[in-house]
Image 1 (cartoon, helix red, strand yellow):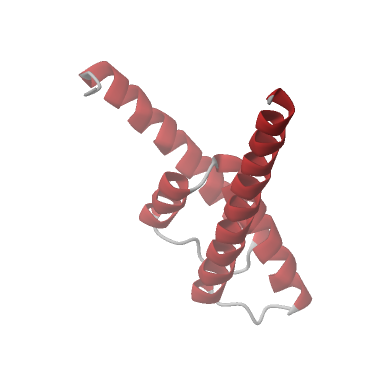
Image 2: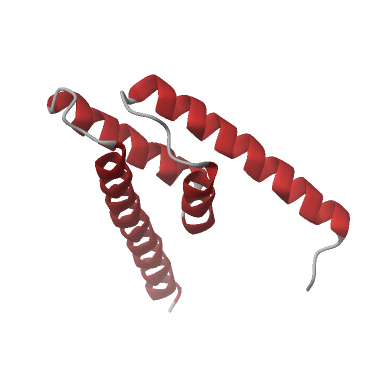
Length: 106
């Protein structure tokens, strides 16, 4: 189904709002410039908002332990890796629960 113009406009506004929130979060927790908005949009297209926040939190913790030896590129790569692992973990957990429920129904 192709969304209408109003639906697309609402999605774009929602994405822009989330990108702004993520950009502000980045600027508060990292000591390097924020990546371009396209990076935040890419993360949001791949992962749920909460997974993106989780990845950024984990990356900021790692950066704090390394005391400033964390470039923007390294922060992006580390956060992306955490997001990917977290999304996989959550998907597996959901699938496991579904299988358990299906097993209980039989």
